[in-house]
Length: 253
Ligand SMILES: NC(=O)c1ccc[n+]([C@@H]2O[C@H](COP(=O)([O-])OP(=O)(O)OC[C@H]3O[C@@H](n4cnc5c(N)ncnc54)[C@H](O)[C@@H]3O)[C@@H](O)[C@H]2O)c1
Image (cartoon, rainbow, N blue to C red; front, top):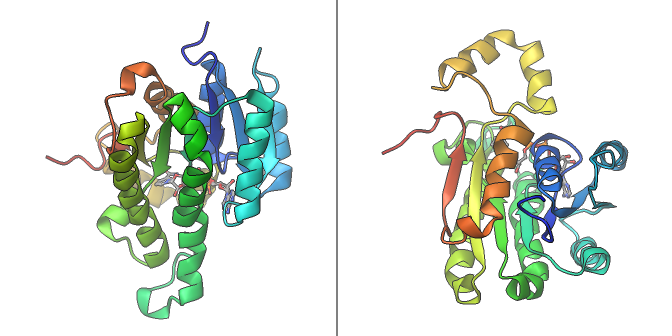
């Protein structure tokens, strides 16, 4: 028996990284999970791996969160396959980075806004009737970069902070339906960050000095455990919150 037996989740951008780790944890906890991504090959590889989890039920869909029709198709296919939606995890994000504010174009900004903030908004709207029925939960994604206004990423920073406003608005407006909406700020070691740190070992050592627990998180064990908890009944009095899961990096009063 898993803690999430009978529950159904959608995780966007789950072909790799934190999305893949969270999908794995949700499946191991007994939920049925739809994973989406725009990278077909990586999605198929991840789907094959998830298929080896004993008893796991999942659906892998190439779906671009910037396209209304892809979002509505992903929601429709999930309900067709599993009959309900309890958990929506808006994890996918693309962004132009390494470009200072004065060099950023509106088109650059829109890459982050559309794939991150607007995609979360589209999925929340499309899932609303099902979340209302299941009295479910939404988990959006923000970033330390947005909190501190990291260099060269104005589009990303803005999209991630917009997700926090979306979270608080959804939490307040949907509370009457007993739907909870929260946000996660992760600090995880993913395939992407591993590649960067392998090429920049000094940067890696320096990053660790800023983390009280002395390590980056694991997408399945750390981010996955948090979303499994947020998907349980026991977490249903938490709403509108931002959870930093970063080994203490963003400690605040
Ligand atoms: N890695 C970290 O520690 C960290 C830190 C702060 C915030 N975050 C946030 O956590 C989330 C996951 O981060 P990650 O490091 O695993 O990212 P990642 O880039 O490794 O994975 C994101 C996935 O989303 C997919 N994707 C991008 N645009 C998409 C779209 N339009 N439709 C569908 N899928 C799309 C990508 O193909 C990719 O597989 C993101 O929202 C990111 O901003 C991560």
